[in-house]
Image (tube, rainbow over all chains, first blue to last red):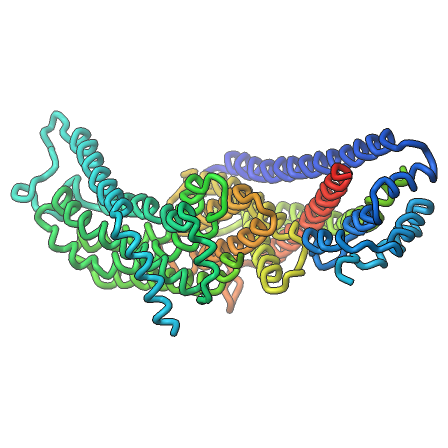
Length: 127
Length: 245
Length: 245
């Protein structure tokens, strides 16, 4: 094999690697974009569902669900570290927990602090 | 204790298989029909204008470069065995599912590994019954003169069958609750069985063609034994997790 | 940000997404630097291969580095699977899937670069020699991982079966790794042995830089994949909750 041919093969091999990596990045970027789009879409539908803007709307969202079930729903999204979501959360739904309700309501008012407070509450199904 | 449990489970599985011989019959029929199809496709291909048809036992000494010997019939044999095995393996849990016995089986206070052993031994038995019929047919169709050499293949067949049955039972358990499991089982099982097919084929070819050169065959047998051991250990370690609920 | 979403999707999951992306850039930069250095070293510093491969040997630096990375990715999947099965709260579920997916990606690249090199060095696109065969086998076995996972609806069961399958599939990796060492009929050279590196120092250095770069790239990609999976999972949960209300 002469050098010129060899150069072509080597160039082809390196080009394949480069193209494949670019494709992989494109796929990753697309997945990121789609995730962002889904988050935004969710945000918009959520906004339109809101009965009234501001605090009252937030409170309404909680109070629409009776007996602090909404609280536990809020607790469910918080990653609780042990990966146990389904059964625990379902069990939690059966025991009302008014204390958690207050926490979630405050979470609605000042989001960042409330979030942290929310996370500090363990999923009430385990208590 | 464990031995008696195993025997009880095994009796149950074998009884279910022998009561209706559906599975083993379909395996045997498949294997024989597949060989007939291959044999006819083959001879049609080989009977060219030169008249070089396949050698019959008395005219051409088998073992020379005749078209009917060599790795190809051995490969065909093992490919047919694998697909026949697939028929049986896909039925591994058929009774449990169809008659809702699975819950009862899971409620039994027995080690899950014993369930695996019973299922694997049942599958092994099905394979062996199928081969007792199919291997003589293979010798008759493809080997003629040197068919006796197939007896030497017994250890190869046994070790390969243990591999087929254990891996097959493990994968059948994995896809127990899968959608369209009859489609998924071969797709998952075949790549895992490639090493068995390669080793068994080359060992069988070595025995049939070259009168079993010991070094070749022993190496393949060692590989098959190692493969069986690895997958039996893996099954032992993971079966409890697969059948947890 | 509207209050309800802020409450339903608190800082937890998006923050972990961010964390993954924040730490991944460092790995991406490291990988980019190492891989660029690897290319420069391969073409400017490393000497032309004297053993007859000539210029085509330049493919080796990336080809072998990608091969090692693919096997490392499968090993990551194995470790993640074992940890998840042994302790119910192991690494996130996304890690195992991402590792298998990236392992498959890198395996595919190995196949393509290897075929190009094979055409250049041996004159054929494909040779049935041990390393190629075993690598192809590993590729098929791991491809079936997604068939298995995709066929099982129940999430819990899917994770368990997927992890068990990732463990079983790993059997192919040592076979692939040692295929060049113990099977004599191969065409692949054994480059590294325990006692000596059969390469010149600059070649070994180039190879090491390329391998490190690829491994850093794998780590960065794993982080991104896990973060994306976590983000998507959190989003699905929020959506389910919103639909329930």
